[in-house]
Image (tube, rainbow, N blue to C red):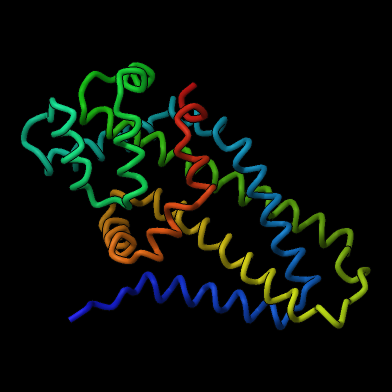
Length: 235
């Protein structure tokens, strides 16, 4: 019997609610809501990595990498030496496939040197710690930018001054609502990444890997692509 994919249900519900809300609120209000989120995302993607680099030199980095390395010991009693063994071990991790592919792609001497590690488990733990801190930095900057934009929007009272386009108001609201919903799901993917090595995070990752639509959504997330860019994280 096929098990129920609760993550898929939640994702579909979020998208459906965003679409319905967009139709009710109309094009103008929904567009401005989505536009504010998009601007905040742009700011977070551009400036988040700088905060991430700062956090890499704090006790948070050591704590996160240490906890992940302890979990890695449960997957293998000895360090995997051959690349084929390392790939096999990575594929056993309870992570979304996109993160597994990123770990495999960056498993090279240049990244080892940049991370200051010499062993495979150290690489995985350090890479994931950098990714987690990068994701946390992104979320912090995003929230601050979004709140600031909302304050400016309320102060200028822009929405009430714009004419309502009755003919396309509902249809435009639905389209903008769908875009807004997708952005929300992308942001939630970042939150999932932060908790990827925790019990709930591993359960959600398993649900994502079990469904092609969720895997596609997670793997085709431009926000996640920016976060896993090792050039921005390390250099």
